Length: 326
Length: 311
Image (cartoon, rainbow over all chains, first blue to last red; front, side):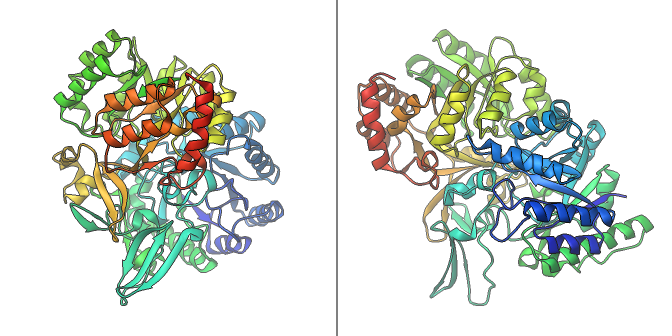
């Protein structure tokens, strides 16, 4: 059966994910070394040690994401994160930067390494590069691939593959996007944030609510419309060819209906996005996929409507898994 | 300080593309020219026939030629194309995705601004495996640029100094999406926008530029004012990215400022005349939002450039 990899932004969420049936939990330290560096989120060293002990006691594994790109002259902070995660007993490290991978592979040769989605390894040759140079055992695939392309990768690669099945969908290739820093000066690669709340303003105007990021209007909502969060690539913009959601509609990825195809494609693990989400989200989404996986094993149908409250704008997409998305 | 010309990122008519490079070979004071379709593999066949002539003309004019690899490689034919490129002899490959590195197997190569090198450790990793030139990601601040350049003295460190800044790459084609076409049947509608398609906010504020699967800034990078600081920071090359404007004038302007024949303010006025209606930006270098343009800062840097004389 495919493994279920679940997000935890807090120790409480970690426990909820285990209770709901996660095979593994991924989390990060509460600093700039991980790509969900939000205030009040993530784990102290002590919390990580306790979280790993709890998970191991319940038969679950913990994967530690150290997946931003170290600031020049401050690489030590990332190296320390690697050492501390290894010493805390992490089952795997999820890494993005070549230099950090090189360090981890040399310093901790027995530590299992996963290639983060932020490394954007989108084909068997790029994956082989990480496997050959750093002994990477698994790659989290970028959200730019269709299911047949994923099947081709698993056929050709010695690495295990992990794919996202639910949550916020990057429209751009992950780890290769500076849209947020262009508007705000803060980027996923460097600060571990995208479209950060510190740069968001909601304004009431005669036409309704206006949301902006770093001074750029990202969307406008009529009084009757719910005002969504201004994630840059999911805003409404205008061009000579027309206006609207130019990059992507405000939707979440939900690949529940593709589980069979992903299994047949040889995928090892399914990942749920959302370390920034609360316990209710983690609990419900993990439980949903646990049931869906059980149903897949037994050949029975699954209720695909039940995750609606947890999707952005109450709408979902199959994203790049369906080729027509492109 | 070298000047390099990055690859044309837009979908230009093939003959125009060829003639552009012929003129660069004949007239532009650039030392290095990176050639090839790196944004969209569907466009590549249109330019393939012209590449040998363009490379020969540029090399005859004394330019070092780099062949750029695709930024995003996912299809089988894209992998094949990348592998063939890596086998090229007589020219250095400019790697824009790690896919290419495995095929190069340690042979000397250049690295383009689409490979994530954010620190001295990853730069050293690449240098040890054959990177001779590294154009750093445009979002890096000067402090990082300086730390990296100092750590790899045998490698030419390059900074993105002119042109709309590439910000993102996607599997989805926004030109096709806007024209309500499937990507596989896109009719190459991006050719209608040789300088990209302007994306504005709903308040009509200029914001970004769409170029098929790529998204760029609306603003145009202009690091003329920072040339002196970059030189002092061990940066060895400035990259000029082709826009739909007179790139020979752009290259001459940079050369004149680097050689002390013109100051940065005068140079910027010439750039503004050559590429009108597009505001300048240098925010990334100052660890500010990328769209910001700090003229006061360039004033300080300019003094520093003047002291250095010819860079």
